[in-house]
Image (cartoon, rainbow, N blue to C red; front, side):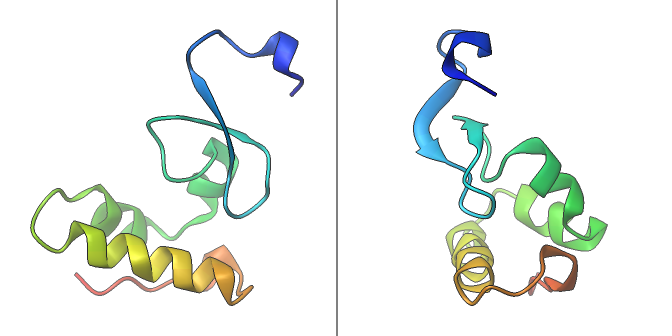
Length: 76
């Protein structure tokens, strides 16, 4: 997607951590990468509790180690 085709205010200058494409500012990953995550990992990352930041760090560590998104296992 080019910057011209993106709706104003919906995207940040920060690319998706996994694929480097533009992503909505309110999501951890771009929609295609988010859909690539296992359902259990998506459910865990959607939780908003005291361990949410730790789960996000697990996601970032998994991506930084260049493992496939399909192999991600988040501890609940």
